[in-house]
Length: 380
Image (cartoon, rainbow, N blue to C red; front, top):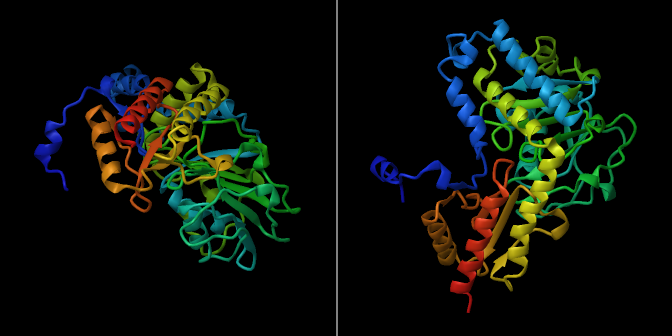
């Protein structure tokens, strides 16, 4: 069913009544949006919108430096690393990583735990030799004990995706492996960035698209060890050369200024609300509520992911053994109760509740109550 403009216009809801479980672009803190709204026409009395500021202006430079400082404080980012605000999303980073870190005659180890790490490995194969270090059955993804995987000697880097949004697989934070000498750790943290504490010093490169936990779509945050820069392959486009962006403080060309500004507001809001440690505890509590509702449902709801690797951010589940009619009813009734965007990814179907930072514990309690009610209504 395709919505017409008329259909969409009729679906009038008040923001305060809506629970948004979107997988990204996703919910943002209302307080952040209200601040952006209040400053939209006239930023800090300057007489112009952030969207109208030159990226070379002192005003925008202040926004950029404040965002970097706040992110540095939130994650305790050491001086050895550079923070970059880039464009192109995580998908562009699939090429950027090998083009910057993989010599043409070198090789890299990839852990494939879901759709996004699989795409990253396929993209990297264009630029060098890729070694998949775990066994992957077609379409079936499992979490991995990273500590138990065998990495190859001489690999330029080991790549993994910390949280797979489609398949709901997340690595335990303790799972960082011991790497062979000279091998660096690269991680796609797009969908769990700032949801738990991370020892940045252990990583050569971390990247994250902003549109899950950090802001609106359009900016990709990269945290890269400075000593790894300047070794890009000859064929690397200038716009993908991280050394160029580091040297130019993310201002080599016009950056996504509004998206950087909005991410900065999110950083500040997170810092004012207990920082990453508080968010980590909140994320644990939220996801536990949903997994408990699944566990006690006597098989009515089923999570396809091994318990040790269940994501705190994206909870996919099936109803009645994959009963599509029941799942459609669930989605419709949820929408009638203003619980939006719960449909699973088109490649796997089912239901997916995304519990990013701006989704509150109260929101999740409402969802779980609905899950319990729906099960009582339909289980026989």
